[in-house]
Image (cartoon, rainbow, N blue to C red; front, side, top):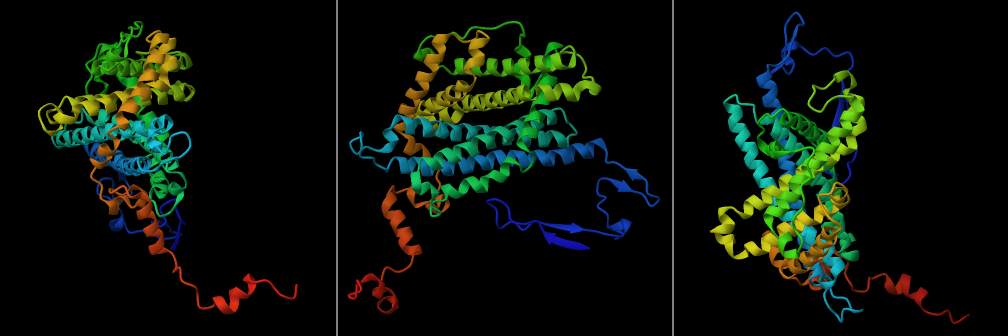
Length: 451
């Protein structure tokens, strides 16, 4: 028996993973792991029952659900540091000593990330509730929702972690040189976070898991079957009909129903386009059973479109969760009623900012007109400007104490330079003259009279 260490990991030096190798070692049957699968005394293998397989499957889903939630907490930390620093740091060129957060480019970098943090907060909470609901169903041998939970948790795991990874780096860069300092944890967050893009399933594989469910749901919709869960909106899908986006002003654009309509169509259209690409490459009808002998090549030739569809579906889920939360009791009759307008600004910003990535496709298919392109882009900038006015309050609402923030440039009191300099002094060496100065160093600092 040989054992060893697999070496250091990026951003996770404390993880002590190892390997073990058995050579000519016989493991007694009673020491094998046979809780679910069995090997009889005569060597016959018995695979686990379908119920056991499904229950084991749910354990993998839990990991993905938890990753979405933990990713959101890490994003909250990064954007808290970046916004508090941006609202304290001043520049002295054309801004007359104003704060860098008042620069449009700075707002455009950070305000959408703040919207992302709240959007994924609400989505992760609803995903967790969905997970608990499915667990209750599983206890009653009801597996009807498990496939949908697997699909949407896979999609969110992929696209939320990709989003957060990109957002952490943008937030770090907005902190300038301080963002590179080891004293400010925002520089370390990125490396620590990267493992979640591969852990519990590679993101590209997870996106495809989500997409396969979408293709199946599309076929069911075409056969007039009832849908449920995250794909229920595909029941209203009409492949040959292109509705018109009816917003022609900024006021009309700030309508939750219009945002849902925009993202519902965007997701449906992305799924149809991916399915049609698959159909062309497989020579099959969309509502036909998949020909396994030809499905791999067809899927491979359609993979980029399917990943795009999975992204649109995942983002639509986030938009829908955000809008449902704003219609919930906390924001309509509870403590959140007084701040609901601010959260609607975040909702519009999230929906429109990410819709910008798909403007070409939406224009090409005829859903949007050229007027809408300029309107959406202008609204994103305007929303960034409006959210900026209360962005500090919004990150303070996360309630993260300074010992968790672990970055003197992002502490609650906003005293960036005092906190940072104190940290440097506490860590660094004494500023007094060392004992060896006069004898060893000072002679090299005075001119040699012989020259």
